[in-house]
Amino acid sequence: MVKLSVIVPFRNVRPYAPDTLRSLRANSADFGKGDIEFILVDDFSTDGTSELLERAEKEIPGAVVVRHRRQGGVARARNTGLDAARGRYVAFLDADDWAAPGHYRELLAAAEALGCDFLRTDHVRSTGRRRTLVRAPEGRRGTVLDPRDAILPAHRTTAVDYAYAWAGVYHRRLLDRGLLRFDDGLHTAEDRPWIWRLHREAASFAVVGLTGVFYRRGVATSLTRTGDERQLDFLRAYDLLVEETSRDREAAALLPKAVRTYCAVIHHHLTGDRFEPRLRRTLRARCAAALRRMPGDLVSQALDSMDAERAARLRRLRR
Image (cartoon, rainbow, N blue to C red; front, side, top):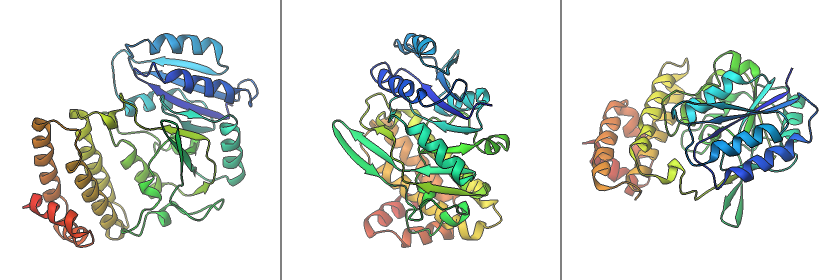
């Protein structure tokens, strides 16, 4: 059986894909034949990325290209990769990021040693030539933990706020249970309901101090830098997060965290400058509706816990 499947969605990333593919090739040298596979999902690229992937399939041991006939977005592309994955463990990488040499060997070794459902890691943020270490928000390292115990408290950044799917590795039993699949059709924030689902439903996880993934910031083609209609999908993602959490057996304890996080994200988008005027009006209207459909007492509680400026802005919008 394949030991590790690494799923990488590609969509019009021609300037960055060569770095990503070189890093996969370097990592392949640490594995025996058939021990690792790189599932390269081409989400209907039109800028020459497809040709790079054709070459990579021939040159990188374990590389397999899967193509979409039309653009589906990162959630669908990751699901396509999951459908093709044969590994005992599954990892993700974004096509404009890269992995350090030896990263997947170390990641797999840590996962096998701890034996938990999923493993989370630190990462390195790359902005131009600047490198910044970003630590997963969990102080207990190298110890198997209950994922539920890492959701709260509501007022502090916890493991569910560190939603990067590529900062970790996941045992196949989660895939067999359906917990690794992303909500098809979400174009942004697809990892938010996904990470909450893992923390609510998985039996065990751990955090280790590996720093082998380099997360490239400031990419002009990244959806996080593009103020189009797809960015509004964060509302659908957080609606889903709140809805699923409301059905949890410990909803009374967990919902305040979910609602407070949603409110904070709404404020973040309202104060950004990426949207043109027409879309900003749509954003405001949809955010106002989101604030009104969440449990009123939990929204009031969340706003009371925020600083005065953020709370006042959201209260005005909620009226």
